Length: 302
Ligand code: SF4
Image (cartoon, rainbow, N blue to C red; front, side, top):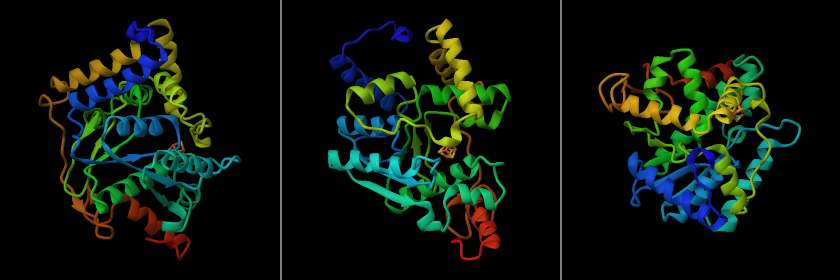
């Protein structure tokens, strides 16, 4: 690992990853052993590795798989569901499963199509649906914390995009921990300082079977492009991605975007349909989307 000036054998690497994760959980005050953690599991390497690490560290961690109804010609959603379930079964863990089509009447790509959102790429609708379901399950089932498998490559690419466009509000909110607000669980990213390659190595060395294929809609996305640019930089300057991200966190903590070490809060109101907190009075974005879908296709669940 040139970026850390470190070379480890299999045995020590498999110890190093959980040790570092435990350090990040403590450093960023993510959660304690007394809190129930819900891990959002996609069937990919990062989220399954995260679940594996948290269980190895002794945390009370259950999984949540959200069926998006994405096929891509190779059954992306059904295969990722199979692998998430397989991991849970083999390790005696509990996986909650929510299928968007069964619960809300339509799979994500169709929902995006009929509401004319995303111009052929359903990512904004997908993000909305995932956030809605994750928040609902965490709230309804009493999880204090929602953990996602975002790695350093994900975080650095988002940071790069936000910086390139000077999206101040997004920069203020990008952090390893988003504190809980009434009705919303705390959100944490325990893998945010690990390179994607490190997580791939961890999953392979732990013999975790995960879906290799990316979601078919990720090809050609801005995030993928930013990741490629940052990879070029990393090749020339090992450690550049980590420095970019960690220096940003330090600057943020030091008050670059406002008062030192504060998380911006906004006034929230309960959605008049689902009760989830939303920034404007009335329906939340997800319920507005479902209302629009129902006006096009009566019978779609609101
Ligand atoms: S790339 Fe796929 S999984 Fe990711 S947000 Fe887009 S549609 Fe959803």
